[in-house]
Length: 169
Image (cartoon, rainbow, N blue to C red; front, side, top):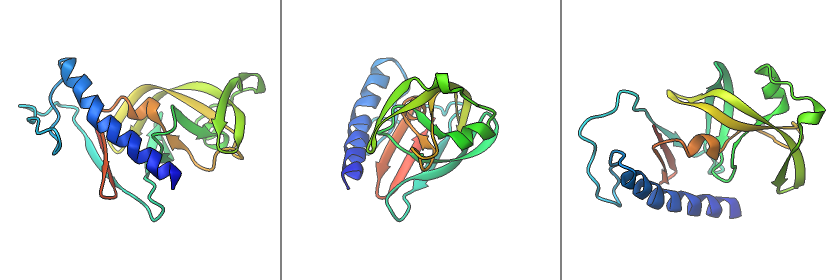
């Protein structure tokens, strides 16, 4: 329950602050029901928007691609970066040596070590982000891959409400 509340607070703060920074930086205005801002005059050629429905536990899961290979994810705004299980990283041809596990990660089960990597391209249903920071964790430490903020923060809009998550690029 605590993680759901933290997730909701982060999403509300993001929804309120990110558009303000984006508009102040000269970017196009994003229409939302709460801001009353106008839609952009034209839709960019690379515009993509997807909607994910929450599962029975209230989590958002999706399939995607990393460097052209299929991968399953749970969306996690509490994760600073994309996090991959060792077995899934291995399927991508990523095989960190023991000496590469230098990043310390604080989890609910304590502090563990992870290997930092950069993924060339992460794609979720047409939304594509290049040069994405990620961590590789042991399969025992991570039950499923996490789509963290190193991907999500580079999107135009991330908005949650009524059991749905909208991702927009």
